[in-house]
Image 1: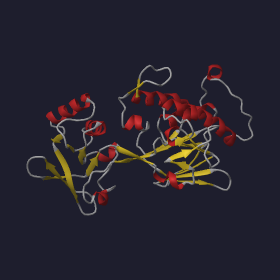
Image 2: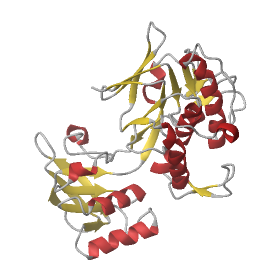
Image 3: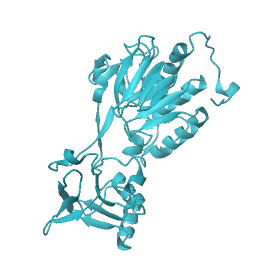
Image 4: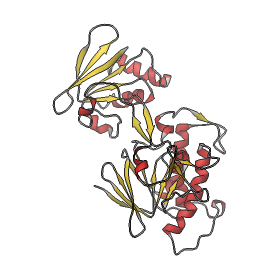
Length: 336
């Protein structure tokens, strides 16, 4: 179990959560960011990293993945810390006024304010319809790659045809002892250059590629030992494996947020537009996760909400200090 103490816990590492770290940093507040996904960026990283965005001020056009990289660079002077690949399960207001945030893996973050920047909620993997799949979860079946070294020298089967499946096939080709990519179609949905790299790896014998096929069964006693692959034409066959990684995308779910005592409306958190605070003192909701009259689900609106939430949280983090607005054009960016 990890115990972390910080000024603000940011729940969600998407663009709005990252920009909230910047706004908090300008006010000398330390942030710890938690996200259920194994990498920062939220939807921008996991779903459409190559998609151009046109409504970010100062950028006539910017790729989603590049926007995430720029946001990461922007917050570097403030040295935020991260817990990735862990979903927040509990949020408790303590008697001394501080807040304790606990993840599904038992990590505890103690803070003075919480910014919920969860986008559409926590993203959960889309699971294939394979019998007994749950039996091997965390015992040979993974839906996300958190630590690539875990797969070094192992026999791996990846299933999927999108960017995530292609990217991890390319990366793990030099890590795994044996890697097979199984895809139900004959062509990939991911980036063409990534599909070309996978084809080249298969031609060179570095990976095995099985198209027009599906993994239909998983087998083993205490841990996964084999998967059964069924091609569209021909007989099924078994592959001995150490890990099976189905990568069929993510689906947003509100998750445990509805158990935290927050006022909700149609699956979103109701906020006060004065500072985007919720009905729980010290807890703010910014970005697509919140709702209020006139709400627009745009990244730039989330940026605005982050700034006002940070100004309000300053009074909680530094109750004895008088706040005075200072422009970055005057003060620049000062490291924490």
